[in-house]
Length: 98
Image (tube, rainbow, N blue to C red):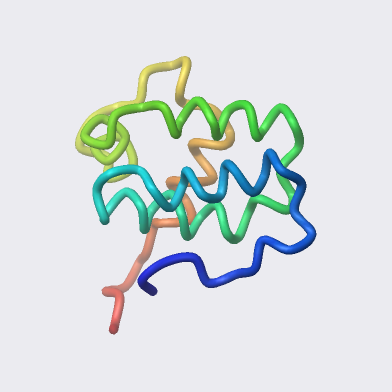
């Protein structure tokens, strides 16, 4: 996957903006991690969950990547159910085949 694969039709302006920002973070690795998760989860997120996801979008790529990959622990204020869902979304028990 190289970018947004779903249509933004039917999304409210806030969700469209969040989806765009998730796919345009700065590093390609983080675009993929945040963008793929956002595509799957954005429709079902509550306003409170969107707030938490937007907070994660503001975290520098280097820090967020370290938290997602388990290289560093996420600070308590970012270790939310949304962060846990993001991290679980990218957890694999087998090698990923391309």
